Length: 358
Image 1 (cartoon, rainbow, N blue to C red):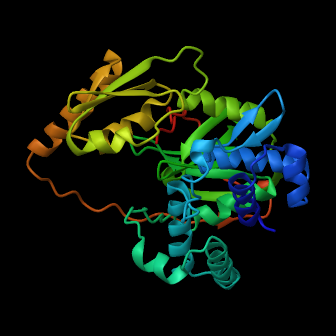
Image 2 (cartoon, rainbow, N blue to C red):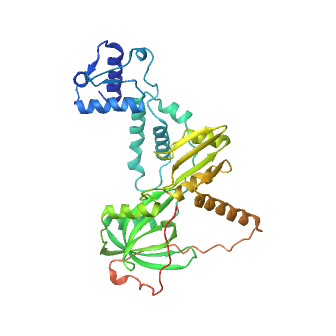
Image 3 (cartoon, helix red, strand yellow):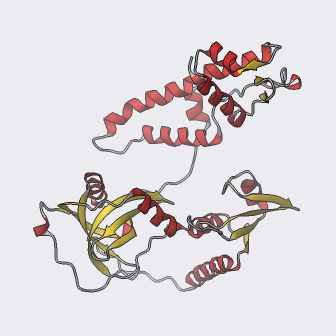
């Protein structure tokens, strides 16, 4: 039996047997280990809201009498998150990117259809009746991305040329450590040979990369994770609490969403108040902006001021006469060299700050 059949069997046992059943009884009936049976019971309670009661005295399980004839397993075996994942994967498989991997991805469509069929879901009806319109930006890195990933996976050093916020060009020799997709951006975490420290850079700022033959220095994964935690505010011991007030349609949407495991929400009249730890200001800022003008930041004051300042900047920009800029020439190109002797000379100028923010 697969997992779905095992869950259906457990439900049948609880609804038809009058006596309480031990974990051993259940595991024996399913012909599985007790530990696996316990995980199934936990999943039924957490994901399917099954009214399973555990009696600590007799160490047995059962449905309460009032639930035996009323509780039914859901007819659709997917939750909201799984629906989104299936939709996104299905759309990608229908329109795979052109490349050498296209033929290898084709069999995954059949596997996805089989997974839906196991859950008694029609692939035809699913594709026809459930869709998502979330826009995903198309990345255009002009060949930089491929060589960057090759160096990252082969553990090779790179010479990168990138632009800072003032469009000033810089060159550095780096040891790539981690590529992170976050908030529609690709962020490269690397060890800077000249600065002797970990740094983070948006891949969109790269103009060119040169893959070197030299091995990249390896930084312990826990140190990389700690660095990123500091970058995004995840290592705060006592983070501030953000207090947001939502109105109109946004209030109903946010009331059904989970923004943080420790969030607290309540209705006050026709407004929904949400309180949550302020861990990643940039990420929360993006979520707040997505709900304008139906959200107000009440606390903390510095975060509220940041939102106000950003909105004022946007208002000032849109109040100015439209100016047509001269298009910037495309200088993106990628060069592959065989050894370190061919790498360009590093400039003497000091590097400007380049902390990545999604």
